[in-house]
Image 1: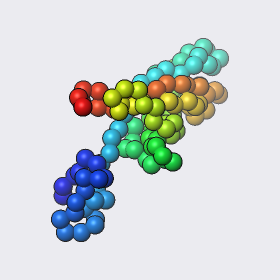
Image 2: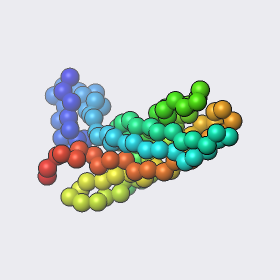
Image 3: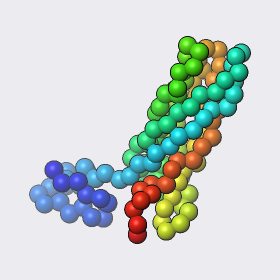
Length: 123
């Protein structure tokens, strides 16, 4: 099966199903939570988003990741990014804000931006 870079580039050889296999793009991310808990602490996390999800005239990405493990617990983060924020030469990032799951009697807030998609790709 041939994978195409963009939907506009998809020219199926035999049937429409070939165009359904189009891959879009993902973003790396990394961040830290706020300090919380009876024993004041924070957590770190990092990962890669889902592929682009169309949203209005832009797109978003899904994020599902566990934080690091601290003092017998960790938290989960399941959220969608905000829409694309364009910065330069058609590159963009996404803003993300929310809170982790509750575990060990508390949760944590977080706020971060994704990394630029394809940072080494030159136009």
